[in-house]
Length: 554
Image (cartoon, rainbow, N blue to C red; front, side, top):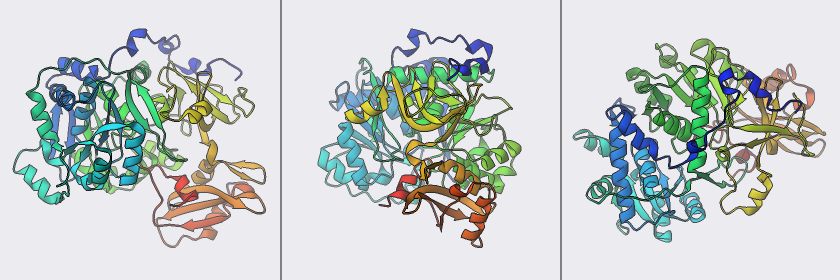
């Protein structure tokens, strides 16, 4: 780089000399529950909304009281400080109680996708050495063999747990769950809370590691990232300070729609921890698919913020019930995958500012975010957050000039120091205090970052770099294209060739039309050599298209 931390000159004056105070990273994230109960006892912290409009809420005091009871239950089960609890829950009212309770008991949590197969559950249980599993009854039969094989203690939740009769019975009848767990013992979540309420107070120091968060595995097998309480406290502070500097303070009582799963690092840190700390309310939608499931939340609540990925925002723009309804949205945040220019432009014109950001599991979610203003720099993922340093590095390890694409490296108090049980991966990615992300990026003279692509996803055509994001962005501009993914495949003549996988809005679209569309906007070597139309593309739980599964079908 030709300047040291060039993004500082783009900050508001109040941020330019920011130094994180040492006491910020002291203690446990569970203190958010204690503070919330003291400052906003009767204010709603979480409200769960079902597709039929049925809803239930927890106040800040209830979250604190119930998580303390759950902590006492966990300790009574014989779990020792530093033991691991696996949480395999959809976005529901149980989730914050389970997380805060585990932390109050001095335990480490590991988040797990409820849709995992038994094989995937077993891999994470084995790698994290979890001792107890908190799972939803919807998926209990899937995890049964894993519970038996590893001798796990099991706690089962139900969406009906927080509803009074006759609503609880109606929910259970609607779900029609038939449990096949006669051979194993387990506690229900409600029983665990009742038991905990009768037990003496727990006084246990937090374990330094808060969370084993597993990476998305978009380029290979997932890796466990040990995130400490210090990491999480730092990143929440960084985000809060950054937003506040633009005089867009998140106030107590504000509402954020949580359609992304809370077990994903994006919603976990931004929706759950940041908004919980600030006294705001998370409006939880357990299953955002179909998108009409979000309709009751927008109809009954004054939603000011939401987070999502490109596919979620593009989908909402196609829903008449959403675009034709008066909305209270102030800002939405996009992350997890590249935000297409077509989606961003339409959203900005029709709804509100959309703030694209960038982060990874290894950086506790955040690296950069577009400033919360009405003048969003579309196509960029914003400025590095305060206390976060970044570099754009060439193959020779040297910093590159503005506008040159290289690997993005990150350093800060929110970055992991190693992977769990992966010494070689740790050595490869964490060097001299910097985390090398594997993402290719460009920085402009104002310090704004643009993510070009994953380093592993770059396609080499006759010696020329082709960035899938660029090709996908062009194809997505075609009005008949719904979704697209681009990968490289071996080619005898050019080394690799560009392959595009497309979901269409209309069956009339042809490969020839797509290729002609690309030729008008891309140089010849970037134009796809092969087009394949599909009904759907493989996606992660948050809607990120998984190129790795297209390259290596299972």
